[in-house]
Length: 449
Image 1 (cartoon, helix red, strand yellow):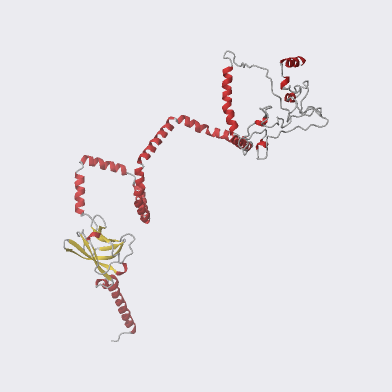
Image 2 (cartoon, one colour):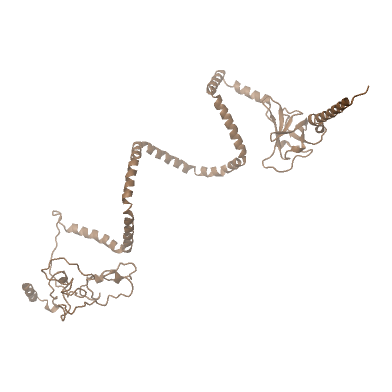
């Protein structure tokens, strides 16, 4: 019986599909190459105890399964677990190994943990992770025994009350607990992302905390002062509330005042600056006034009778004056010069009207020409009548200033000596000479007046 062409094609296709399926089963599902050692690396871990670990248990690295445990055996007082690892995902050779459980009653697995920042070589064929870098969980039986012992130590009635209180406390807060768990996951993830910064913070905390411990007394003092300040605020709460309540009105009035002073304040400040500079320049005479005036006031109070407040006694005596100074005054008949005693009106005194004799001349020793110079920049010890004469180094007070008499002046042809009181409206009779100062002459002069 002949087989048709169609059947032959079907047989060929079926055979090809069977071969492909067999290859997939062998290489993908059964992983025969891995079973016979192709693409795998064998390494071992030394454990203090098996910790529930068994052959075919998973081996994980950074949370990813990279192999399985092929053998667990006892050797020289410790347990050796042999691993078969994928060559494409080998862990660091400096990794540590820990046995963990998937859950409280779940199967155990071996977790490989790399050191922080490790960039060294990976595990090679036959490498061993020593006991110093391995750990196993506490036995479940010991944990259950400890929990049972703890619960047995608590009285049953009090434990029931505690459970009731816990039930009442957690009743109806399921959504809040769910959000708390979610936020905790977010916090853990954020902490994991910022692990390096957190580690540096923990390392730098001790240098930060040490100065705080050293300055603990100062911090306690500051805290005590803050407590006192808070207590003072509490005691003066009504007054403080009043200040706060009236603060807006006071601020408004202050604003209005500043607006009113906005135009005059610059002028005031500039004037104050000028006065300050003048006071700085003339501090010596100001200081003299401040020293002498209180003494004068005290003397005044001493000579005023206590039973006659406001009274001031003084004596007038007639003394023979030395010859008066007439150098520097305006000539009679000129504006500002001596006037007739019948003229009672006020007229301004011409400028620079003072005795202009040399300072060494005994006539009128108390003249303005002997005033001390306080002008800044004046030579030390200089005396002069004006600030312009105090300045510079070319002025000399030894030369007398002479009056210039106009041709039509009544003094033309007469000696230019007259009594200074004539400038104030007094008689312009020249002062008597020393040899003329006798009692008969004084009496006759007074009688004639």
